[in-house]
Length: 147
Image (tube, rainbow, N blue to C red):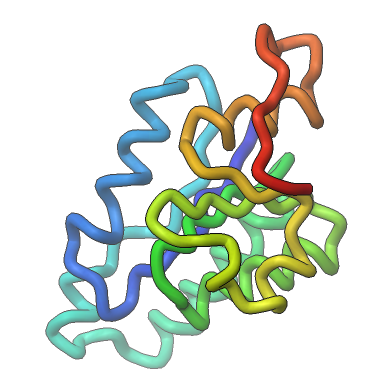
C-alpha cells in the first residue's frame, strides 16, 4: 500500500517536520510510505534555489498521484499541505486528516471539505486507510471522529 505523508515542512524544525513521519514508518514498515525529500536544512538557510522548488513540487505531485491515499498531519496550518490535500482530492486520491494536536472545530473548511476522514491518532489513520482501501488487510474496524 502506498501512502503519501503530507504535513508542514517549511518554517518547522527538523524534528517537527520529520519525527511524525518516521513514527508512521515504524508502525507499518511493510507499507510503501511516500515522503517529500528532507530539504529542511536548505529551507532554514535560505539555500533553496528556483530549480529545487520546481523539482520539489513536481516530485510531490508525482508521489501524490501514485498514492493509494494520503495522510495529512494538520498539527499546524501549511500552504503546501493544503495544496497537497486539494491536489489529492481533485485526483480522487482519498485524504485522511490527522489532527492529534488540534480540535476538529479549529480546522478550516478547506481542510474538512476535501477530506474523506478525520482521525485523532496515527493508528486510526492506518486503520482507516486499511479498512477503506484494503479491507482484506485490516484486522480492525476504523475508529473515526468524522467522515
